[in-house]
Structure formats: structure tokens, C-alpha cells
Length: 226
Image 1 (cartoon, rainbow, N blue to C red):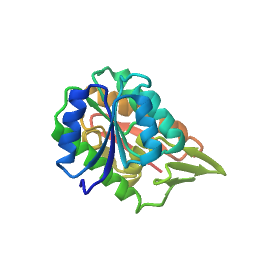
Image 2: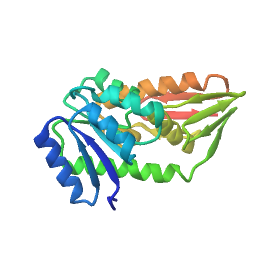
Image 3: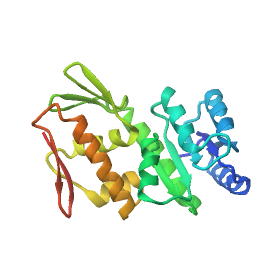
Image 4: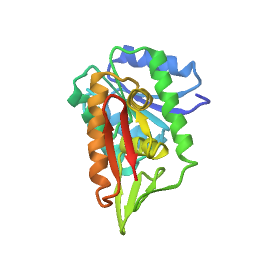
């Protein structure tokens, strides 16, 4: 899917960054390689990349802070975090700071490329989807917003992705393992805990309509009832 798609890579480990850059370039991606968070933010403003790959621990500005600043002006461009941290809180923090995916070091280049292509593919898909009715709510997937009774709530990338999949399978069971692998890239314990957090957030954002429920079907997954 490369076709000269512009990717911003921020990584302070020069050797690793160079390996990632060269590997992506062999797949026809154009890579903007930055060595710290400040340089990455300036490059983002100037070059408008189509996807960001950010190391979490960087000098001058860490990846989470950088992502937050990006999200203030750009809610849509996909962000993948690279990090050695692997605790549940770290994973959840990554998504809460605007990340779309989270890759733990060490990682394989093939896995990174698969995740990049998956995110770029979802962006293309979402451009064809406009308003989705969910009870009293109007869900705009591309704009990542929920409108009800004149009140608009903005969703994070991950909340919007999860709600889209729930709405596609409304009144049916959304298989937990399948959606974890689709959105989180893994169905391990840490990913499952992270998904539970996002389900709780969506329930709160949909609580204006008492006829809407997201129920846990133990051992199988979740069901959006509306």
C-alpha cells in the first residue's frame, strides 16, 4: 500500500530508526525520519504526513506529549506508538493520548508494515461512511463525533473504531477475539483490559438514550442493543 505514502517516523535510537526507515522505503513509503519530539512536531506541521510512527521515550518531547499536541489540530491522522513499556496502564495511556495502535519493542518489520497498511486501509474505508443512526444518536465516523439532542461529543480514534464495529453488528455479538486482533493487533490480556476500558467510555457517552446498551456476553464478546 506504500505508493509513496508519507510517514513520519520519530525515534531517538538512530540505528533502529534507520533500519525502520530503510525497510519502509523498500515498500515504497516516503519516510520523514526525526530524532526527537520537537523535530517531529515541526516536521508534522510542515509536511502533513499520512501516518505517524512515534517512539514513546524521546528527548525534548516524548511521544505521548507529541501525540496530544498533534491531536489538538488533527484528530484523524493515524498514530502508532513504539515502546518498550508493556503494562496495561501504559497501553491504555497510549490510546488515551490519541494513538491508534501500540507496538511493543522488540518488533518485526513485517508486523509494523501490516499495522500501517491496516490503519491506512481503515482511513480509506471511513471516508465512504457518513452518518450512522444509533438510537437517538447520530454517529459520524469520519468526524469521530456523536450528536444527540443538540449536543456533540467528540470520540477518540479507538472509540470511533470500536463503535463503528459495534454498530455494524448491532443486536448481534461482536466477537471479542476477532475485534481485539482487528483493532489492537492481539487478543492478549493487556489488549482485552484496554478494550474493556473503551467499552466503559462508550457506555457513558451513549447514556442519553436509555434504550441503548452495550452488554458483555461472557466468553464471547459484546453486543450493542438499540
